[in-house]
Length: 198
Ligand SMILES: [Zn+2]
Image (cartoon, rainbow, N blue to C red; front, top):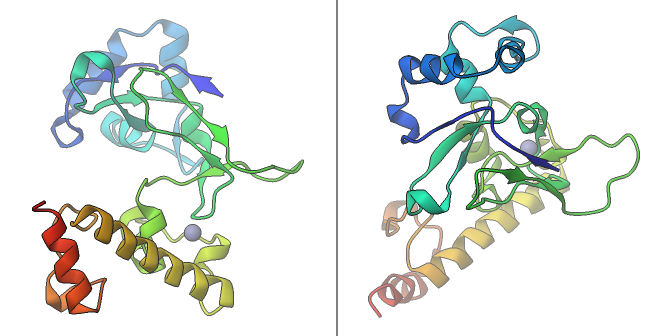
């Protein structure tokens, strides 16, 4: 499924103001304004301001004119899908102003289509994922005290370690301190950090 944004804002996320969003909104055609005004927080109450509505319904994208700097687009349709840590669909990062979603496995009739809201969740444990999401996900990988959940967290820690070994830095671009290391073996951790210098 491909979707064009209702509008885009060429600014880092933290610098986007209510004024930027109001200006973008004013450029819309009446039927497009109506679509934006129909947005509801968790499908219940109207948003208290436009910034909130934009934050909850936007995707980070980039196009060839931004030299890789992120821009943000408001995507009404793709924002309707729920998150899962074991999704059946993916929205790859794009270098166009259009986003597209793809099934990553067979989806049976009546099964909910979900995708993962954060690109690094394959390397994050349940607690870390919930902190980033700011809501409690209840997918199968997040149901604690089940064998599936335990295996899921072990696999994600393992992937994070493998990523550290191949990149020489952790998810946040930092070296791991000995106090909170993903790779416990100091010899292995040191060689991963040194690989960054090669
Ligand atoms: Zn989950």
